[in-house]
Length: 452
Image (cartoon, rainbow, N blue to C red; front, side):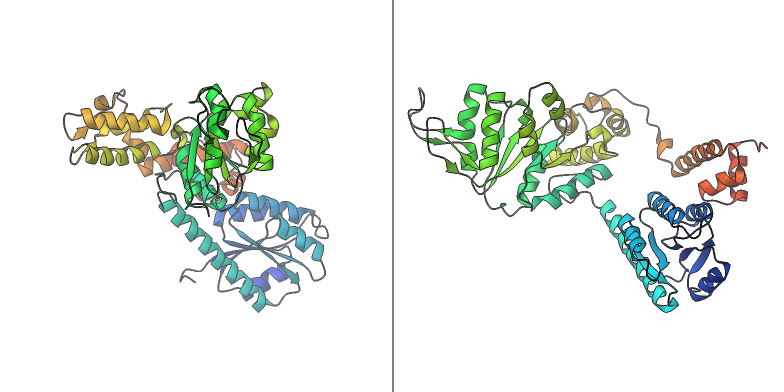
């Protein structure tokens, strides 16, 4: 435990029991609440890591309805908080229900303070470990090779790839062109038990329809004019490995039925052949199209979609990844400068501002091509917005000033809280998790009137 005492919130409507718990848990900074509203106010104000709560609360202490309502609201407001529910000794049904809702643990009343103190201490330790884990995850640039990101949404995608890589399921990677679908497909293969076998990819949109079937399924000698020898298809060649179907949304309807049969039966039949050949392959597909919209339009089979989309991973576009455009730009400059013998190069402030403001409709691929061209064409080791071919943007460094950002966030929060409570200072302070004097100070700072 730290030298600074940890805050423990005790939700209990019995004054005698409140006093007993304050005395029993004097190693913690204990704050109390005796009903749902005061408990939520204390939760916002102190942000305790651990809460103990009785399910029987006013206005109906003999009913658990108010307690379960409070439990749900606390877990919604502070999902990382560990809530220990206090129940009757034989109230197993409500204890199980509370844990199912997300409570950390339960204790029967009357309780042994020493045993409850051990559970509270363990809850604090678990909260600290989870907080440290989140901090470490936020620090890493990416858990996957080839992926550079610090955006929470993209980091979540990377962790999903890690989790499903070892499972023998079909994965659908959905996202706009240039977002890195093939890189993630290769990561799925590299992290799987098939990593030592082949990774084969085929782009359904890049191959003419009349050739796509033979590319996928192969053909027997003499099956058609020009079929001079037996040729296995890409699916068969990827046996024991991973087969990546890129742009699956462009697969012709005639081939969708044949692909569905392969996914169901795990056998292929070459063109001109009659023998069913069993194939053990992991299938990953990707597309920039909205497959559900294509199903509605009659352009994609619904049964094939559900076979392909056992696990769906949505990849956010570059414009939605906070800070990633500039992070990637720095990496691309270093890489292309080295490849082209340009020595040490860097991005100027105008270039950085232009990169941040550009929407990047072509995503990472567009950014990569833009930086490659700029590294080659720049006349000095400093790359400008003009070298990038982007419009100069206003470089508002004030947006990165933490004091300005914090003040603006506080101003907006105070406005919303006062509006939500119709100007009630006490309720607004509870919503904001601060004292009334602190709220008055903020109102003075932002020039808000103290209306009655």
